[in-house]
Length: 167
Image (cartoon, rainbow, N blue to C red; front, side, top):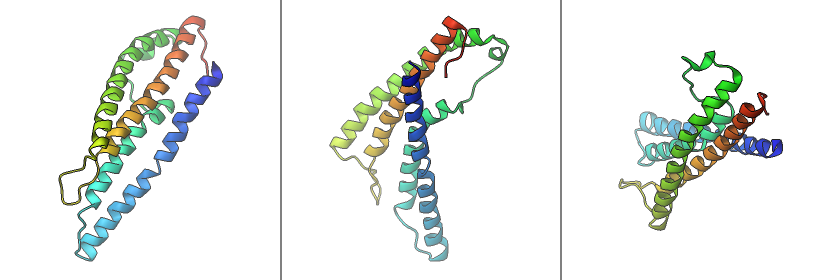
């Protein structure tokens, strides 16, 4: 079981690190637009849309990485006072809500993403940036998030049963 959890963590870590390089591309696109607009007085029709689309993909694909590294926000008003085992028990309940949210994200992401892909949906602007990669990234990101959540759920079950933490 530990090996399966390590594989899930590795997938989340790997996809997060690869996806993080999108920020360099986004930065380059924005810098290009700034240079074109303010130095050469030749603004582009595509830079804003491309940077926005890439940022949407960036956010969608980094959820699992944020979860595996513990970067999501927690509300610790009462939670911080609980024992390790009690925290795991409370987490088991909150994971169920999380799984419902992930399921909705994956379900609607795949349906809308595949529909968008079939018609090659794009923005109704002068540039017409494709929308389907963003919608499909929601489904992929939601799937990765669900998988990482499943690993967290298994860890919490182990903690509730044994009182020990599993890595």
